[in-house]
Image 1 (cartoon, rainbow over the protein chains, first blue to last red):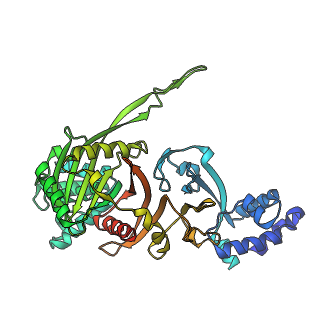
Image 2 (image 1 turned 90 degrees about the horizontal axis):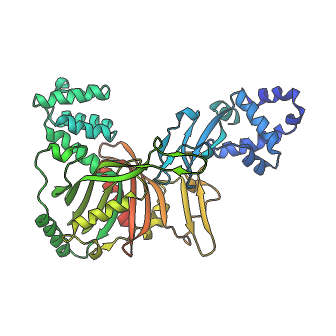
Image 3 (image 1 turned 90 degrees about the vertical axis):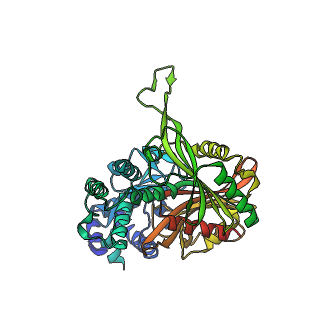
Length: 127
Length: 334
């Protein structure tokens, strides 16, 4: 689905419709610079000075329309970055030798963050 | 015996390396396609190798050299030293050759057993270096979740001892006057500090032939900035450094992706920063021209009161790839 078509789907959500243009501009800039950017409501809220809740609602709707996909990140418990990414929690092993810190980590849902990444469809419509 | 050697390769998750090794042997010896299989699943390839050895197409040594390469290169903590002169290096090599017997010419069950009954220290030549090779066992404790228990007022944590095969080496290169101590990490579930215990035991075993206290540690941390500056050959996802005012850490929010140094806000390449630890991937082509990515965590650590450089290499590699990276680390430290 293109941006334009997606915008039409917001006709029955005036609260999100008015926020959408700024999100569209901001996301386009972020993704042109780095197509692999990790997108979450908090970071985008800080960047675009929009309400985190509104951004999250839009991101969820974009995911439904396959403009975004959900990614789970297992963060290194020593704070050294991302140990492993997966689309589904079942892909995470119970234990993993972390490349970032060189130590073994046990799976703990506290270490998992959820964010979105752009699909090819979104990237093509931005280009 | 062949089953034992193949078990070492399978345990190291190196069946892919076995396929490549077999393909090289076929090419080098102009063997017919039907001599043994190099495609198929693990069981198929292992059965094919067993048959080829029993028919004399391959020898036990053909497979043992691969096991040696896998066990001696990667999944190790590596410490880099040097000596001042070739005379000093020759003296070290003589001491090792006198103190320890030569490694067996042909593979033996005892040498390649999953849990060797005896710890052995022998010497052999490897890639232009004299190598003192320890083959034996180590042990460590892991929490046993089944036997551990708790109630309202008491928590009982039960630890069980695990034993693992380990291969440690001391490598003395006469031409370069370099000394490497390579400590194999016992197992993925061994505690992070297990290497210290295994290193101390290995160094004790090496005395009096070799005393690390008499060697000069290569200050690999002096070369960290140069490695960071070498963008074409390296890749970074996390970096941490400090200057006189701040300590900064930056990491990617993705497992892979854009190099952290490409980020607009990355400033740790400024030469006012110091790193105790460098987490960096080296990118190279191996002897077959295939791309290899070597992940390292390099640290300045204290050992017996002295500062020493430690290089953790998380994966098993070819000798070529590992030696290439270690040479880079040494060169940049000059």
